[in-house]
Image 1 (cartoon, helix red, strand yellow):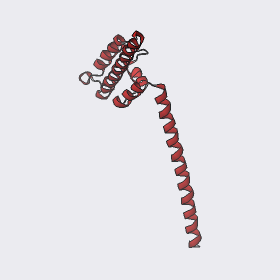
Image 2 (image 1 turned 180 degrees about the vertical axis):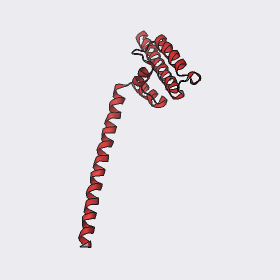
Image 3 (image 1 turned 90 degrees about the horizontal axis):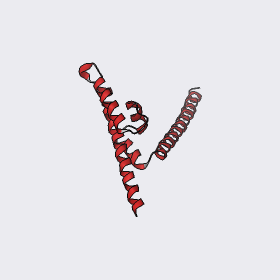
Image 4 (image 1 turned 60 degrees about the horizontal axis):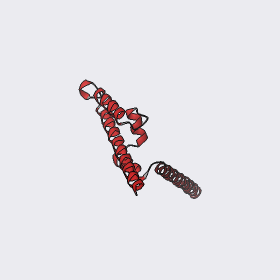
Length: 126
């Protein structure tokens, strides 16, 4: 009887192990597909900036509540949110740091766009 019980436990462990490994592979494949999809929607420089700063362009726009990359609107919203979340007035340092990171990400995107526009201008001249 103990022999059969040990076999049942062993077979059950193998089945659970295989199912776990299959689920792990599927999750890894889905994660890779999502990462590739994100990479295709952003330009290579923009995707690199997202990785370096740690925040995506869309998330930065949501944090600063801007729909377009308008430098004046970005600065205005940044100044307001930075002051509101100042720790000395009862704000959150965490939220304030998120606001700073969002501004950095949007500034980087503006720099990338300006560089791209400059390169397009040079190509048009030749």
